[in-house]
Length: 192
Image 1 (tube, rainbow, N blue to C red):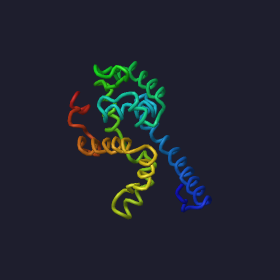
Image 2 (tube, helix red, strand yellow):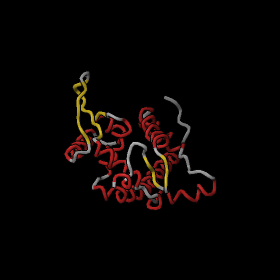
Image 3 (cartoon, helix red, strand yellow):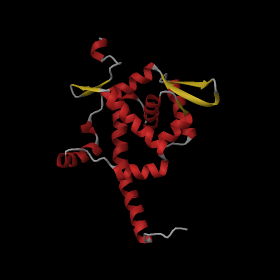
Image 4 (cartoon, rainbow, N blue to C red):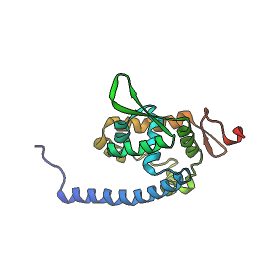
């Protein structure tokens, strides 16, 4: 057994510090997230499932559970509700009958893209809380230490999907008139 190079007090202080900070931050994030998705009659789990389905383009329920940090039954039940609303479709693969896969419908993709277009950073406490750091250092905090902790807990696969989703946004979306736009989606003005 390797010798520990930390004290019990140090371990407890770190654990409690990260627990208290995470809880405070989550409470704020949860409130902002719920307000953002409320006009679309979604809850956080449903939005997260749509997000994962979009970025993985054919995710299994197991993938949704893993990358959504939720129990498999939670991922399945909320996916089922999204299917009933016509936002997701379920399928089985010819070579994998054991797993259930989800895919966004056109309506599901449309709602997700509308959510991205309607994002208002001024309604996000974590964003506005980080603005003074951006003003001071010229960039937003990269939160490298937090990412390292999450990587050590959930693994490299989790972080690959995490990074893929942000890469997709950076490469697929443009910003016009202070709104995000996806090139394959017509704006509401173009439709009218």
